[in-house]
Amino acid sequence: QVQLVESGGGLVQAGGSLRLSCSASGRTMKTYAMAWFRQTPGKEREVVAAINWNDESTYLKNAVSGRFTISRDNTKNTMSLQMNDLKPEDSGVYYCAEAVNSDGYDYWGQGIQVTVSA
Image (cartoon, rainbow, N blue to C red; front, side, top):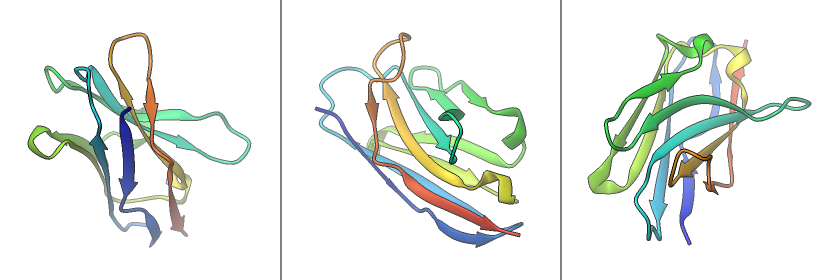
């Protein structure tokens, strides 16, 4: 069973930076993609950034493009999200997710809180 553990969240002032990391263990199948999702109260969980594990192509939600960078480190089985110039609307619980094929995300972390104060 794949386990995903997020770290690096917290409270930061607007304009500041945070780096989220997701550490994976227990893999028995090849990874297809990983992603960061965000959930805020009353809203559905939405994808913020994603990375294809084979060709390292990436996706960034328009609202974070130019401020966030998603990356992976195969040797350490980790994925990171560098978040710069943070805005209050970036606040939420961020979840790490992993997909073994293109059908959707199969494994999820427990989530980590990011709060950006104005």
